Structures are given as C-alpha cells and as structure tokens.
Image 1 (cartoon, rainbow, N blue to C red):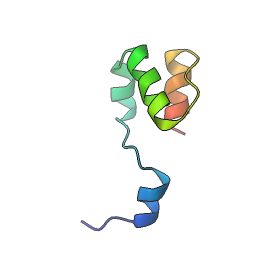
Image 2: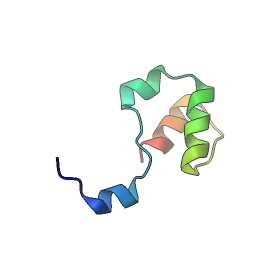
Image 3: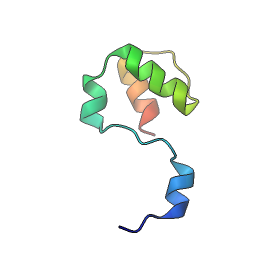
Image 4: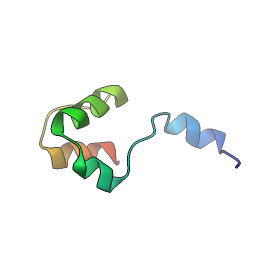
Length: 53
C-alpha cells in the first residue's frame, strides 16, 4: 500500500470513524481534542465536529 506523504504530514493523528466517535464518552473526545491541539470545550456533538474537520 502506497502512502501519500503529504497526507501523513497534514493528518498525523489517526481518528476513529464518525460512528466510533459517537460511541465515545465526552472525556475521551476531550482527550482526542487535546492531543490534536483543538479547543476542548463544548458538547459531544461540537467536539466530534471539531475533530472531523
């Protein structure tokens, strides 16, 4: 499998799928946001939206 090096640079953190994110607890989503350097405040829906953009 060939990997696009540019994609690796743009998205170094592999995120769970949208359905997996929806099953996660808010605290887990907050941790993912922290790891990605994103804002950690908001509802689960807001955190999921932030992570998937």
